[in-house]
Length: 216
Ligand SMILES: *Cc1c(COP(=O)(O)O)cnc(C)c1O
Image 1: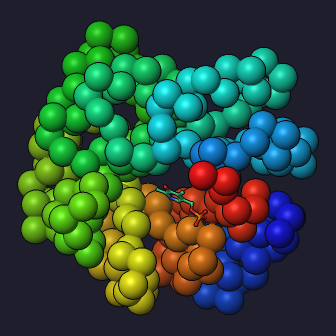
Image 2 (image 1 turned 90 degrees about the vertical axis):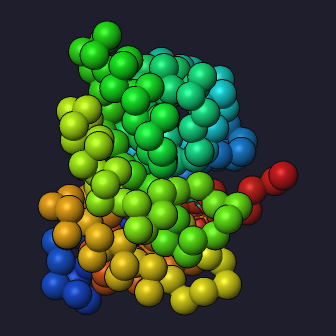
Image 3 (image 1 turned 90 degrees about the horizontal axis):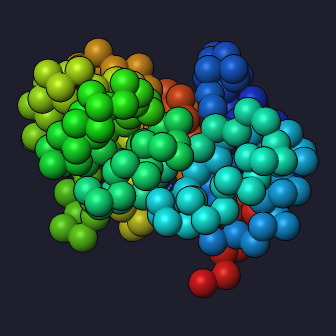
């Protein structure tokens, strides 16, 4: 599917629920995609991209940035503390802040450099043992802790369990964000971004629907 088709689907989904399409940011998830495909999407005008792994992002984005202005990079995969500095240097946003250790590491580096990307707290809404994210019951305390560290927390992020109806998770995330006075909602992927928009998504993370299947 082309980038412009995804953009039209986003616009239509927004209109269907009375939202302004400009309040929804499309993040093109380029992990594992061949450079030629990423370049084609850059040529088509897309500037916000998502990467799972800091290492992979550091390997490919400096070259794209040399050729294209205004690239906005979002780290959306689990962070190890020894990759936090590199993630902060590379990215305009981190969507996977999921534990106190990472929050403290980010705060330390932000204090030192005076700069910090926009942050989203990842919530494990399905309470899946293998999945990253703070548990729903621990979220409010963690938001307070992050605010105590003066971190720029913009919103929440979730990846619903594959086997479940995503709407319940989108609704839960929206409720938790509202309760904590957070405006950003990073939710919705190739299969469910329209549904996520109807629940208030401000950032949709779409990979395969734009780039095609990922080759492992
Ligand atoms: C890979 C990935 C996506 C994109 O998934 P698609 O189904 O290809 O759209 C979105 N969010 C996260 C966190 C991902 O890892």
